[in-house]
Image (cartoon, rainbow, N blue to C red; front, side):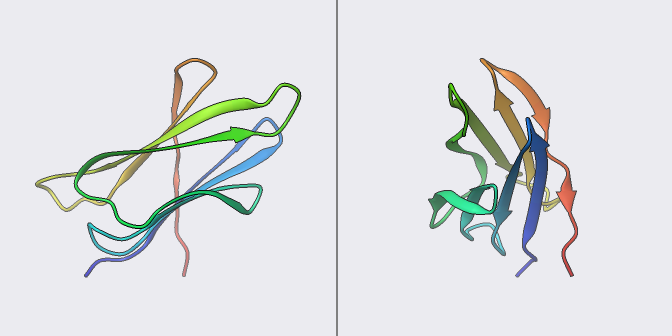
Length: 96
């Protein structure tokens, strides 16, 4: 059935976390500063995109792309896209 995956990045004094549920069809949560701001009940193989905003004046919109491999069960990869397209990989956190 697989395990859950957790990705985290600190950006501009804010915490961005992505939790991907077990299996290829589990839920995806996007949290900013520990608060859920976007949620997808299910995800499938391929690319899944969630959007959010970092607080501030002005707010900073961003996208998180979660790529679930279609053929090789290597687990998802997560990328943050911020400030008009600047991409940075989000490292996976191992949670016991």
